[in-house]
Length: 292
Image: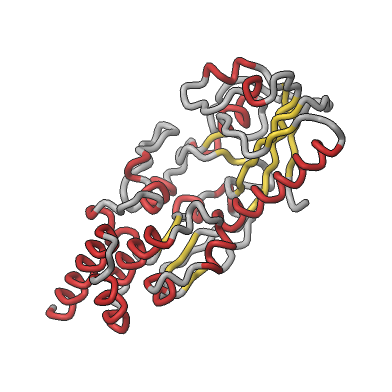
């Protein structure tokens, strides 16, 4: 089904002790026996030279993984098992505790042959499977990072602390998903509509991965609210019209797309206060850059 790795783990309640846990397997499926982790890889991309909105390849892949995991849980239901997909579990903790991967300085999990460029979907079911062999327990120290600071140097916001954790509010991927975009980070986003692969692009754990072209979307279409194709690619939750218009306004100013001033002027007149505000700010930035 397009997944590069499938892991079967016991559905135990101890997962609920994790501070970031949103769901407990036993609360999702009362007689849960197995947590199925499905890993779908993607290829990081460097997209600095694009003059349109760029989306990390993570997002199309994550949406595809979501749909395929839903199909798989449906197959289990047809066999009269209980199964729920897209369960929010502490995925990093599970991948570490069961020795599936190790953590890098950028706080991402890397797995042999896959690197750190993958999306994980979780299914909880009462179907019994043979569990994946546990290689080691606990959070391993990533020896591969011992003498390497490439991700720290590549991060434009200084979000990577150097102790295997990050300041999430500074991470451009997290910032790109924020609504509205904090003004202090607008310019740093460059052409990024969603995501940032900079730390992964330089990580030696991904050295064997061939870089791909990023997924891009015309700014004019975004500003006009023409996002149906985008919605089909990354899902309706992320591709909301007003949110995309606000982000597109930021990117229009970043890329100095003077040819899109008419689109910004039109958005300044919209009834949505947030969109109008973003368009006015972008228009002001464009006009200021023209005067320099």
